[in-house]
Amino acid sequence: MERVMTTIGVALLGLAGCFFAGIIGTFVILFTSDHPLFYTVIFYIVLLILEIAFILSSFENILHHPLFNKLLIGCLAGCIVAAAGYKAYTLYDQNMVAISVQDIDLQKYEPFRTEQPSMIASLGRSPSYHLDKGDAVPRLDGATALYPVYSAFVQTVYPKEAASYDPHDQKSVVRGSGTGSAYERLIAGNTDIIFAAAPSSGQEQLAERNNLELHLTPIGYEAFVFFVNKDNPVSNLTSDQIKEIYTGHITNWKQVGGKNESIQAFQRPEDSGSQAMLRKWMGSEQPMTPPVDSVASGMGGIMDKVADYHNYTNAIGYSFHFFATTMNPNTEIKLLSVDGVYPDSKSIASGTYTLITPFYAVTKHKLSKDSKDSASTTAVSSNPHIQPFLTWIVSPEGQELIKKTGYFPLQAQ
Image (cartoon, rainbow, N blue to C red; front, side, top):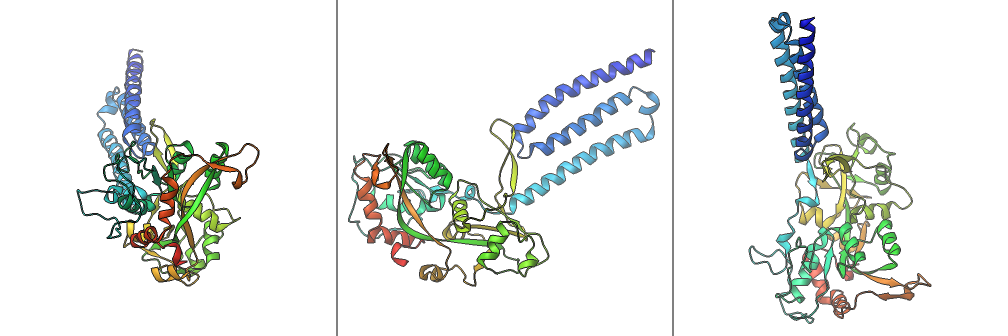
């Protein structure tokens, strides 16, 4: 009876210890790990092994059995190997990321930056239009891939002495928030002009809910491109084949002349410019559910986000030409020809490569209460410099900067 009570006491003591260790360990894992679910499971398996060992150790015949320590060490070693193997895999997986906006240092394109050689296009002469110190300069934001373009505009016509131009500074007059955030900031009244691809249906609906209409001024052209691992034997796909891949009707590279591998078709977040372009290009056909990553949220929980492109041998992804070839080049991927035409500067400028889209300077207008016609809208901002600035952007000088940056001016189409 005494032995039983002792065993029960040991078990309860062990459970109490495991309980408190579990609480502390779970919080540590959730707030420090990029893959909390896996490591939480491993952590509780280790606690369970230790609890069982703790209970069994109260029995002398088991404690001194030659297999006891071997089994205990083997179980713990198995957990360590599993955790180490998973960590090695995640590091390998992270190294497979080829196209991600998080990899871009926008400060290399910051206007008037003196700490390093400028990567911004220049006219090489004084512009015909210029804003002076003390002018209320238009506040700008936009897509990551277009930041070098509007940064060049700013360095050419804005006064150097204006407020902060740091793209990450909340008080900066020239931000680089990315397409989704830029549209939200424009609609909320936190910026005057954004530079981006056409809005998604969700962004248009958000504007309408705020009694606003988005006004799009085309300022240049860009090509929408698809890419794969450089070792993928497939170099050309038809438009129909790509659409069938992204709707899930073609699932193996063998179906399009490649290896016998399943296709992993990566997508972009729903509020991104490239995702809006994919949906526009696919028309009435809906893309399949994209791959997701489980990541730690800001509050320590777990959430799913659209997975960044990982350059597996069976992967396919998409982006815009300038971003994939100039802003974030990667020698481990190759661009695909579409309908037999490779997307290079010549084919894009001539229109032979057909996946071409305008990009825009976007402002907002207030809808009248009795009509949603564009004729019944009025500009929201009272800044007198917005329209002259937009007029200059589509002038020969602004178009020259677009071409020098690496995009395609309006006159090229």
